[in-house]
Image (cartoon, rainbow, N blue to C red):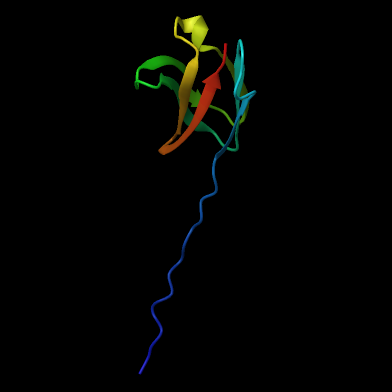
Length: 102
């Protein structure tokens, strides 16, 4: 014997952002660009390999649109190496590794 389950409604949520880091790896500086498809709270932190926060690039409510931040670890007194960009959009977290070369 078999039966059908109750029909329920589901809502699929698409990503609210497109994140791009170019160039990567980079020398001197890189551009962290993103496009918000809708208004959102955005926080962007950069961390080194030891988990130390290098800088917060963004911490605000933003309108839908395109945004770019230039970044270089050397500008903040940190050495060349591997870093992590952590971007929080509302409750969603996106991380991407970046490499600064001499």
